[in-house]
Amino acid sequence: MSGRAGEAGPSAAQGAPLPRVTLSRESLCQLLGLVLLGMFLVVTFIGLNPLADIEVQTRAEGNIVDRLVSLAMGGLAFALILLRWRLALMLFRQSWLIWLMVGWCVLSVVWSMYPGFTIRRTFVMCVLTASAFALALNTRNTYRLHTILALFLTFVMAVNIAATILFPSIAITEIGVRGIYGQKNLSGQVAVISAFAIATWMAAAQRPAHVVVGLGGLGLTGLFLLMTGSRTSTALAIGLTLTVPLVMRFLARGPRERRFLFILGLFGAGFVALGFLAVGMTLPEILKHSVGDPTLSGRTDIWDFVLIEISHRPWLGAGYGAFWDVGLDADPVLRAPPGTFLSEVAVGYLNQAHNGFLEVMLHVGIIGLMLALVAVIQSVYQALYLCLDRTTSRHAHALHLFCFLVLVFYLGNNLMEATLFLRGQMLNNIAMLVMFLLHRIWLDRLIGQRMAQDAPGPQAA
Image 1 (cartoon, helix red, strand yellow):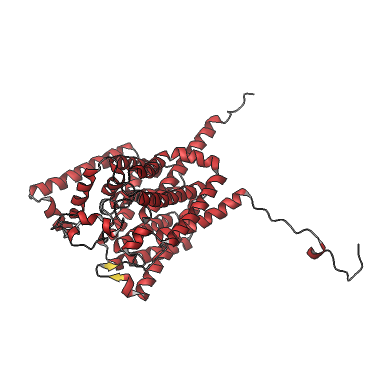
Image 2 (tube, rainbow, N blue to C red; image 1 turned 135 degrees about the vertical axis):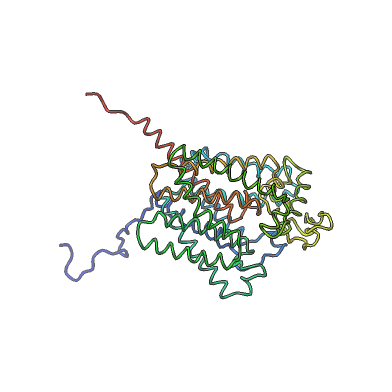
C-alpha cells in the first residue's frame, strides 16, 4: 500500500480528476422534449393568465409574458429540430400540406391591412406549430405520451373544479361555469378533449390501477361538464366517446359492413330530411325547436356581417390576425349595420366569427381555406385508416382513436366556434399535435415498409 495508515488518500483538493458527466444526444433530446411538452400542455390547457379577464387593449397589444414564453418554446423546438435534423426533414416532407398553410399565413403580411399585427401573430402561430412538430418528432413512445396527456388533463379537471369552489365569483358566470378560462365555451372544449384522452387511454389499460385512475379522471371530467352547463359539449363528449369506437369496430370487420353502414347513414339522413319537409318546418323553426334560438345566440348576424367583409377580399383575406383585435378605433364592429346583434355589443367585445371556416376566409381568403381543409382532411384519412388497421397494438389503436376523435371534434366545433388554424386556441394546439403525430406514425410505417422491401432474402444453399 502506498502511504502510511491515517494519511488521507487523494482528494479533489489535491488535484485528483473529477468524474466527467456526459449527456448523450438522445438524453438531451428527451430532456428538452420533456420541458417543451410541459410548457405546451400548460399553455394549451391552463393558459398563462388563468382566472383573468383580458382587456381589449391587452389583446391588441399583446402580453410580455406571452412573448417570453413563445420565445422559450420556439428556442426549445428549434433545438430539437436541429438535433434530429435528418428525421425532421423527412417529417417535414410528410407534413408539407400543414406547412404550406402556415407559409400562406406568413405570406399574407404582403397584403395585410395591418402588417404589424400579422407579423406578431404569425410568429405566435409558427412557434406553436413548430412546438407541436418538435414534440411529434421527439415522440418515440406514443403510449407514454398518451398517458401523460390523460393524467395531465385529469389534473386540469381537478384544478377547474377547485377553482370553481374557491373562487365562485370569478369562475361562475351568468350563463354557466367557466372554470379557470375566459369563457364557458372554452371550458367545455377542454372537458371534451379530456373525456377523449382519458376514455381512450383507459380502454387500452392493462393494469387495474390504471382503470381506477381512468375512472376517476372521467368522473372529474363529467362533474366539470355538468358544472359548465354546456349541453352541446356534454352531448359531444358522451356521444362521440361511445359511438365512434363501436362504429370503428364495426367498420374494421370488412367491406360488406362498411357498405351497409354507409347506406344506413344515407337512409337515416334522408329520412330525417324528408320528415322535416313533410311537416313544413323551415330552418329557423328547426333551430328554434332543437336548440331554442334560431339565431344561435346572435351567430347568424355575425355570419351575415362576416360574409359581407369576405366579399371585399374573397381570395386573399385581410391578412392573418389583421381583422379582429386591431384596436378600438379600427374595430370591425364599427362597420356593422344598425339593427343587428353586432350594433348592440361593446366595441372590442367580439373577436371571432364564431365559425372557423368563415374565420379563415376573413384572414387568408378562399385559397387559405382550401389549404386548411386539405391539410386537416388528409390527417382525418390517416387517423381513420390507422383505426381500421387490425395489425396495430392495443395501445397504438387507442391513440389512433383519440386522434380521430380530436380531429372530428375539431372540424365539427368550427361550425360554431373559430379555432381552425387560429393561433393560441386550445383546440387548434391539440389538433396540430395530433396531426403531426399522425404524420410521424405514417412516416414510421413507410420507413418500416421500405426496410422490409430492402432486406435481403434467404440465401440459396
